[in-house]
View 1 (cartoon, rainbow, N blue to C red):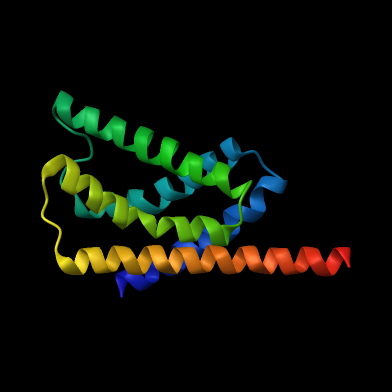
View 2 (cartoon, rainbow, N blue to C red):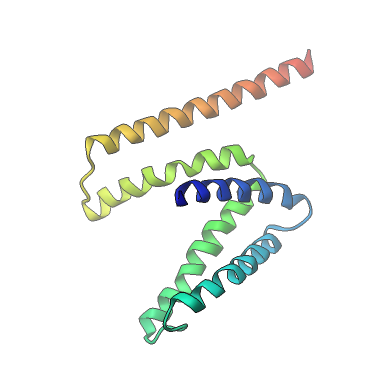
Length: 148
C-alpha cells in the first residue's frame, strides 16, 4: 500500500513540477519543495524520535550530506530536467534507478544478482525502449500531420 501511495504521489509531484518552470525558476521550485517537505516531516520527527539532533560529528556529516546530495543534486536535476523534458520521459527514466542500483551493488559490493534480477532488468529495459519509441512515433506522426 505504501508503494502505491508513493507512486501516485511521485506522479503528482512530476506533473506539478513540470508545469511550474513557466512561472518559477528551478531554484525557487526546489526551495518551496524543501520547505513543504520540512513542514510535513517535522511533526513526524518530533513524535517518533527520542532526540532531534545527532550527538557525533559523523552523525552531523550524515545529516548535512543527505540533503546536499539527495535533495539539492538529485531533486535539483530532476526539477531542471522537467523544465526541458516531459514528465512521461522523466518518470520512465526513474524506472532505471533499481537497475543501476543493482548493477552498482554488483560491481562495487560484489552483490549476487539472481536470474530473476536479470529478467527484471530486461523487462524494464524493453518496456522503456517500447515507451520511448512509441512516444517518438507519436511525435513523428504529429509532425507529419502538421506539415502535410
